Every structure is written in structure tokens, then in C-alpha cells.
Length: 373
Image (cartoon, rainbow, N blue to C red; front, side):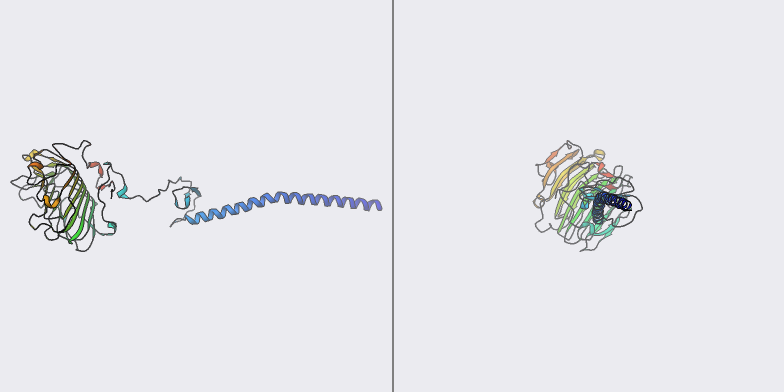
């Protein structure tokens, strides 16, 4: 009896040892599992925090989602949906005016700050007169090629970036100045900016004046003309229409040009007389600037007479910077105005080709090279 009790006690002691050893083994194995679980919980919390920082603004998905690192992304993270590899997020939002163009040189003057919020007006395909309200700023849009003359009357600051002109393919006859005009700027608010950029007058068409300033009353207009290409024929003679690439007959107070190419001036190129038909504009406007300009005379009607004419040099105080003329019977030295010789190259074309190439336009779309200022 005593032997049986001892045996049972010994067996119970062995079972207790086995039970204790099993418990210790289970405890040892459980510790790393618990640690891993805690780490997973921590990682999930961190991931959830990162996802909350880069949550999409709208929409949902049932696809697989992955989170990756990108130093340019907000919070340093991006979300990948459905296994699609995302592209790197740029550090700044793209801007049309910051897109490099094939001309490779930024323009001298930027449009007024906030012009994107100006009142928008779309030019009809056939052109026409746009009657604008003085004191109101306007952004002019031209999504389609324009086949007729455009006249802008009134308005305060006006910004027109991008547009093409065509359609007038018949040789002009009779009194064709008005119907074959490109753009005419008339009176508006007294102190304002008229900003024209990226306008292409296409080949195979006919014009009188490409751009005309006819300001009769206000004195404070600053006009900025940049990246304009005139492939159309400025069709005129002394006996008929005195067609010009740019004519200022009355205003502006200040004219700033950077980037203009004209290929077929049959009579005149720039004819600048801010006092024509009116008193000289008052005020202390900036000196006028013609920069990166190449004008070519066309002899189909007897030859261009003047490619450069400044009738009011004491007012304009003109500065020339890489201005090239070729193909005229008379250049600035024989004009009835005084054109500065510094920066002027007569009887020559730019060594690198046209300052404003046609490649700046894709159909009716124009890409600006951006601005220095």
C-alpha cells in the first residue's frame, strides 16, 4: 500500500514537471508572437496615419491599394491603386506660361497678375467688334481660327494670349482696309494694359494691317506685343492701302515688343505715330522697346517702301534690341522718322532663323515660353 502511494506521488510529481515545462515552453514561444503582433499594430497605425494625410479628394476604389514613398509627394507618400505604377508627382503644378517653347527664350513682360480671373470673352470665328466696358478687365479667348477683322472697343486691362487668323485667301481689291485688318485696338479706360501674345496670321492669306492702334482719347495705354508671327501678306501700295505689320496712329503711350516675325510686308513694316490724328499722349510713359524683331519686305507690288518708321522719336525714345530688316526700298535711314542704329541690322536676317517660329502653334493652340519678369 505504501509502495503504491509512493508510486502515485512520483507519477504526479513527474506530470507536474511536464506540465510546468510545457507552460514555460508556451510562454517562451508566445513572447515573440506578441511582440510581432504589437509591431504589426504599430505599423498599421502608422500606415493609417499616412493614408489619412494623402487621402484622395474624391472617389473610391475596390482595387488593391499600396502606399509608396516619393519625396515630391505631399507627406512623402503616394497611393497606388490596382497595381498601376504611378508617375512621380511634380513639386509644382504645371503652368502653360512655364512650358518651354521651341523658341528657347523667355519673354520680357508677363501679363498682369491675376488675369486668369478677368471677365472672359470669346472671339467669334468671323471676328467682329467686341464692345467692352470701361473699368472692367478682360481675357480674350480665341479657340477657333478667326477669318475676319477684330476690333476691341473699351475695357480696362485686356489680355489676349493665343490665336490664329486665316480665311481671307482672295487678293484684296477696292477699299479693303477694314475687312482685311487683323486686330484694331480702340479707346478704353485711360490707364490700362493691352497685352497681346501668341498670335499667328497664317500663310496663304491677305491682310491690310496685322495690328493697329487707333486710340483717340485716352493717354495712358501701355501695349505689350509678344510672339506674333505674320505669314499673311500685308497687301498694300502707296496708291491704295498703306498696309503695315503694326500701325500706331494715335496712341499708345508706351509700346513694348518682344518677338515678332513678319515675312511679306509689301509696303510698310512698323509705322509708329502715336500723335497721328490727335495730340501727343501725355504722361511719362516708358521708352518704347522693339526686341527680337525680323521684318521682310515683299516686292510683288513694287517693293516695300519703309520697314521701320518712327514719327515721334522724342516721345518714343525707342530702344532696338536685335531688330533685323531685309527687302525694303528704304530702311530706317531713309524713313521719315529716326530709328536708333544700336541693335539694328539692316539688309540681314537673324543668324538663328526667325525669332517667332510657326512651331510655337499646334493648330490653334499656342504654348508660351514663359516670362523673365
